[in-house]
Length: 121
Image 1 (cartoon, rainbow, N blue to C red):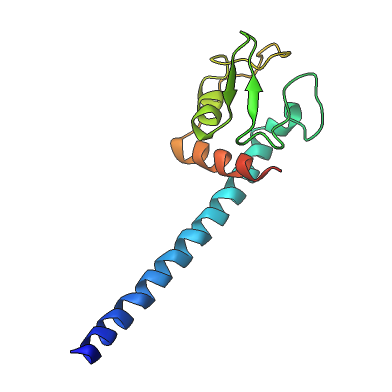
Image 2: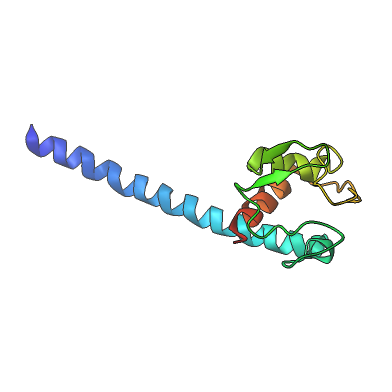
């Protein structure tokens, strides 16, 4: 019986490891797709990696505290970033005019942008 148990475990380890590898590859691909979208949708024109008067930088945004124009603060988690992409006027960052246009993107494209923004440190 002990021998059977080892065979069963070995039979499941390889597929599980393969799935873990595919998931990691998908995440890397998603970040690269997000980087490409960031460029092709001209996000970098306003969201520069340094201080900009047009739009806030996205470097270091993920998990940071963001002061909004109404005086409240939010944590820049995935939900906040998604909302800011889908409805850019919903929560305006303090000091900015909220001029970002609504961009028509699929949920997968937004997921890719969020994955990319999370990597900007």
